[in-house]
Length: 307
Figure (tube, one colour):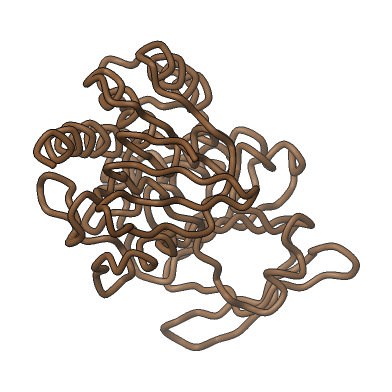
């Protein structure tokens, strides 16, 4: 069992920045990530709005963050944390799926969020067969094809614009009568000649045999249901916070299941901090995730000094 100062769970922008600041504060820091380092930032085609960052891809940006954190002394481990608890000595104990265990004086939960499913018939059946949640991952399979994009936030607009470089047959549908994305993104989306926007529209069913070839749609105002051919459906309907470890620790969550923190990124459990997309009220941008990580690590160091 390793004995740590700071344990960070999750290696997206929040976790990587926390690792850098934790290591710079001379804390023995370990980051555990069960998937690839970088999280959802890896699928960003062009990170155009990170101040002073130029126009890097998400992958390039994450590579830089990862190198910085390691250069300052942070360690990384690939694995899945099955259980997290606070021991009688006040230290946190993490049990991993491979049988390894780690103890730490403070923990930062940077576990992020996963794409929200629509929950309609055919969605799971055609996942990977025409249904996707990542344009940069799967867009190239549908060059020149007809694609439905579902959602009304930043991700939906960004991904529809990315896909519009691959085909001129993009249909972006949103269940409301206006987008909730940032104004600049909305304007670019609406002015894109390769994107057709349909408001007040939802998918009722995804169909095909043996692969996806049609969707059943409903107009939410008229309740009219109709079918339309398509080659793919890309879904960006929000995210679901990954909070199972927070629940182990009895960390307080908001009504939507996100972790509640104060301005120090501290939770209701002493020594437990949260950062990034898993946190309640987060703007869910790379820059704010990084800021959360820096803040969490700074105050985690203060907590460790005091205890």
